[in-house]
Image (cartoon, rainbow, N blue to C red):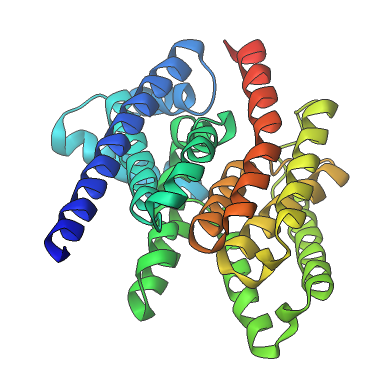
Length: 317
């Protein structure tokens, strides 16, 4: 019986790894599509790298992208691969790792039956796909940060916190949400839903104001209907299970979606955080959610997935 259980767990891990690789390959094809369409960050990166002459001149890189661009030039010289190929490998690695982490953390076959439709919808949601395929830099930074959250403790965790922030500064608000959660835990405020939600709302407004003050680049470009869809998603995350704020991943997911909504208020786009928020919320459901939570969120998430997929196809294909 014990040997059968080990064999079954091994088979589940092999299947999870296999599907992770398949998903990574799909993400690579999405990187190629972004390049052909000239959308996302892919074309801008390739044009920059191919037109850059002195790769060792670190001071000429944008300050907030220096580590990432220097690393890409290093990989280009080390493996003699095209920059588009390297970006594709990075997207493959980050997306496969995240998918694999999720697949091996499913608690039982009973939960798997309910989770498969939701996992497929989440990972093929355009904003989640874009996190890996379009925003390659933020995708690898988020993957490093997520590994630190799930698997590391002590100094190693803090080193990866720093590395992810150096690769992409957008990881800093996520890291601060991590510390805010444990600060509230010590003060036992997080036991109460409304005070915790209010504190998250204040935090999200502060992040939105700070972003607008120090980063004068991104205005809200999504349409009004898309913004309403994000609002719908936020309400779904908050009220599907009120225990969401008692879990670190649920707490971060709600904080991120509130940052996006706060950005709408002051006309500053944090739309990239939608993908991060969805992934974090899915991990909360996998780790803590009961069958009813999975069912309710799956039914509620389906319209968001379908409409945003149609929105993406209509506007970008």
